[in-house]
Length: 330
View 1 (cartoon, rainbow, N blue to C red):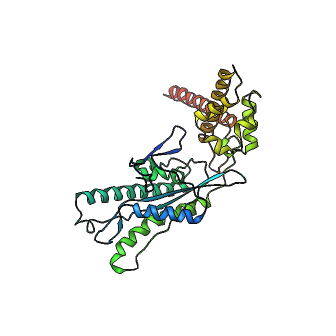
View 2 (cartoon, rainbow, N blue to C red):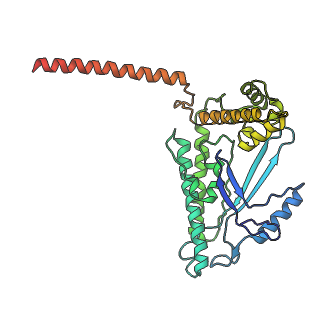
View 3 (tube, rainbow, N blue to C red):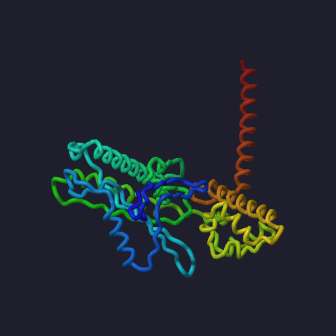
């Protein structure tokens, strides 16, 4: 639920995934702040409405995960960055939850379930950092990990850094909880270390998410054959920002430039641009690479296929000759 709702609003927050792969959040209020003091006030309000309850280990135990999403825009480059601050509710053992009522047991089950999925995602992402391919990270199994898609999605083009702060109790009586907390945090540290040892991937110049504003303007102008003001259409967006635009936004930007009687033609241009953009995105996502990180071009892939076919034909000839010789001997 939203910890900062307007008066009278009580709808549950919905988290899903759009057709373009972006994480969508519904029924959550967005607040604009001008300074750190306003942000601090909102955080205090949110903490005051967060679900807490007394348990055997803590009088004010968190009964939910707290998530703050902070979006900051660089005024010089207009590039937007997102910071996810997530306070995880602690897992509870059977011993700690033995006196819970039915409602509290349901909360405990949901908390432990989401933490288990998070653990699986961390483990899978750790293995993916050291492997070339074939590793699946199950971040869609829970709303918490789906919200953290940019952290776990191997194919995500957004640059992402993750910091984990683990709260550990110094008491001997809590050693089992401390050990469990460290088990959650340690694999992610290994994943970062493995990623740093990975080979450098060749830059994909055809990936639109990596293009500058000038490159994006040039592409729009080329695809639209000069029939649209590319600079006005792209505005100040970089490649990754332009890729995040919805299909409706493409049509709206084209319609804004349409003259009387030219609306239909502009809509066709918008459709061509949107389909062309997504063709480039899919191609970039499925681009094949060698073990050293270099890109395999379609020409090189075709040449490799042709070479394998020739080797197969030659091998078949050798086996045919061998079969003929074996028959003549016996």
